[in-house]
Length: 330
Ligand code: SF4
Ligand code: SF4
Image (cartoon, rainbow, N blue to C red):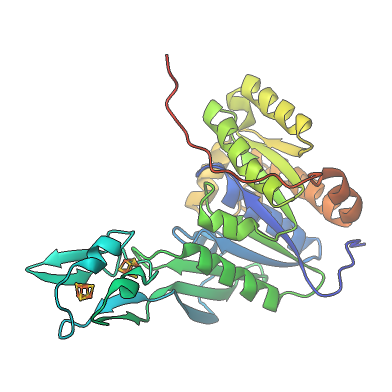
């Protein structure tokens, strides 16, 4: 039945989109629910550590396990040793050192823990202190499968580290036949890179607007960089048939498997308010029917994994050169 036949690791599928509000969480929850009900072993990873929401949508009422995750630490200045030379302020690439009332102090919210300041401090007044970046948590959802979620502490960097730890925890909980559904953060930042790196496939979501197509291109460059086969869903496809066709053309040209379209439907908004996957809350709605059909298509991909992944995997890795977006000239 499941033909990837890998002996030690689960299959990781990342739901990603270049922008927020594109429908990732709706799609990820509907897919996880469908696979679970069809008998697959499923673990969901909510990889948006700045705004996690799958625990609300999937009904996780309590955490079975909470793990505090530490970052690289922050610099602290021993004022009794400091001779007020100011070299650390000049050396800090993040502007995390301030001069306050003649004393040099570290803004621990901004400090990235690189310790460049300690390298230039002749008085050896700077040391590293431990700092927590957030938590990784595990819960059983109301549907019976496992959710791994993270939450970044306010103002802390290293959200990508939290996501990497979430994926480690998910792989510890998974078996060789588990499908890990990763609901990634929006955009193409470090959390998304930490979600996609080393994953098996990307399920991209795009809205049919010029910005939606531009965001799709950006996130797709990342998946090509990681040599991931990609499938695509067009959400709210009826808000612009013209741009939907343009997105479908882009998919065809780049070997992305277009697995379905979801029409705009108020039932999705109602289900989010009710904190339920729309396929459970309003199964008769147009959006739920489209999502069920997409989930079945994705299940078909999993059953035919080898052939599908060979067909849709990029032939060579794309070097990832960050794009500088400039305003259009008139
Ligand atoms: S480099 Fe060291 S001695 Fe100089 S201001 Fe900074 S902490 Fe003080
Ligand atoms: S550790 Fe790095 S970021 Fe933090 S204060 Fe020192 S130089 Fe700045």
